[in-house]
Length: 274
Image (cartoon, rainbow, N blue to C red; front, side, top):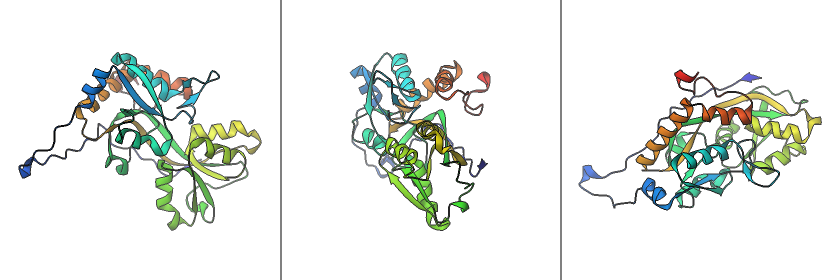
């Protein structure tokens, strides 16, 4: 598998101030979200439970997966009731913009486009994005996609990236509304190629072993962070403290290793725990 693009996104809580002090205008007072969460005694977390192993339903139909456990650990450490707000890729950000959820823990990679709409914590995990297909397919680069169609989940980073490259490279992007539908299309042969996480590619391979479905080349490496409504600096700071503490004590690495069978990359873990 040939690595095409490797990108590390600079994190650290991308907050943007929109004050009008320089113009002598005061913006309306707004309730602090961290205070609201604390007073309510619960934290509502937007998580997709149809993207194993980050989010899934177990045999008893209970939410499970690495993002679910991360949210549960956060709620426990903060002494709050954990409330999962089910989502799909396209509704993760709208959930916090409309007040339906407090934060997003759902394989949310940091991109400049998203940073214009929401703020991010520091990275708590990583996601590798690949283009994948059956064993009979030999594509190994963007250039090799000419004349082909690549399936993606609508609203994901794969959708954004490939949509911007499709015209110049002569391929077409086909969009599915959620990850479960994308996996079904690939496993049934309806979608020859797909761009997604390695975890979803493995799910396709498990559903139809005869396809020998596997990654063909790396599209990108993404740091995954917690999404927060803009302007909530105290909440972002508290999340950053929590993430750093749980990278240092190894708990976030334990969750990642449980579901992905490998340790978090050394570049993400603090030097003292590498």
